[in-house]
Length: 203
Image 1: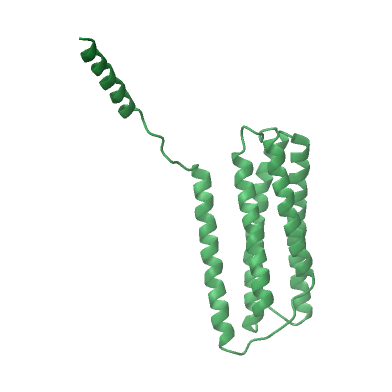
Image 2: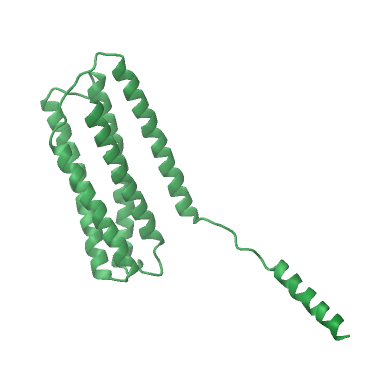
């Protein structure tokens, strides 16, 4: 009798184990949308890079030296990415003062990058390299212009995180907003490093 009772208890426990819901792998909807957006940007610039190389191989290609200010803007963007990472670490540790400072630095450096890109365009005009004219210059303006547009979108995302940080809504238990911001900003930094190296190599 005891043996049968033990078998029944074992069967009930086994049934409960089998009936327990299994954990499912799920991604945050906002993060999923972000990654889809990043993939679309990668595909856009990949197609533009391919078109650039094909057109360059056809000839009638104006070669010009990249203005020095693009080197400086690259350094500014790299520093802004480091500041963005500092902001993330500060948020994880609930260091609100450092978080506000780091996000503010990132935002200012992002604006500085855009201004330097615009100054770079002015240097190109002084070198008689125009958007309409030789395809070499056209591609350069398109590449830098598209990236600049995405930097503007990154600044908008950053602005929301900046406001949330000053409202103390970004902290160790609520990192979703800052994680999305960090991922997007680092992506834009890496994307520019690729474009910079590409244009420097194949210009």
